[in-house]
Image (tube, rainbow, N blue to C red; front, side, top):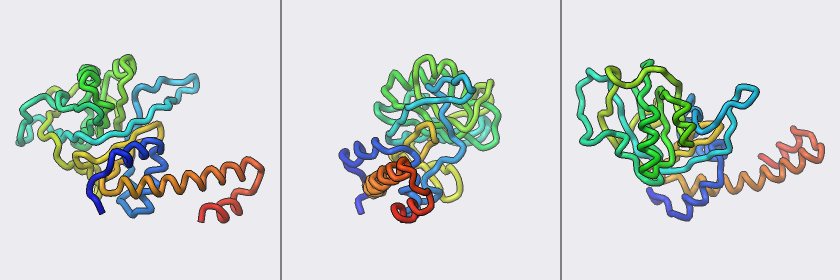
Length: 228
């Protein structure tokens, strides 16, 4: 099987949600269905009157990875600021050390990323300046927020290296990241075409299932009949 994906396959992937893709990855026995658990959209959604966020935004793009370390931890230092490593059409994925209460991404960085043509940023950690990200309409996903910046807490150590999200689930440079209101999923290039095929099959089944349920058919028999 090819370790890369074609442009046609990547374009086809864009029609599917993070949920569709996660279900396909589960069928392919990819760890955790590629689900980057706990990461959610912070921008550009705006609070609704009920207090929840609502957005039809969905981003698909290859990952540019950044490994952050605590400020006083020995390790390499990139030759450029990591925000300058964003690339047109890509999504930056930042791995912050677990358990820190400081942010490693803010409004200035989103401004720079947007100017490079990046599609968004995904942070396994904390961000701040939510209103600034929303004001410029830049997509940002994170595990949490903070009022504190990175100064004195974290620094970038390596760019475009594999980073570990959790046991058996890594994000590699060039992996496809998909983020929407439901969450974030990572797809290794070698599985993109298989994922597209499974998603397309499931989309047909879902259409028939919605139609049947809309006619008033019972959920149990409908699922057994159409989604074996």
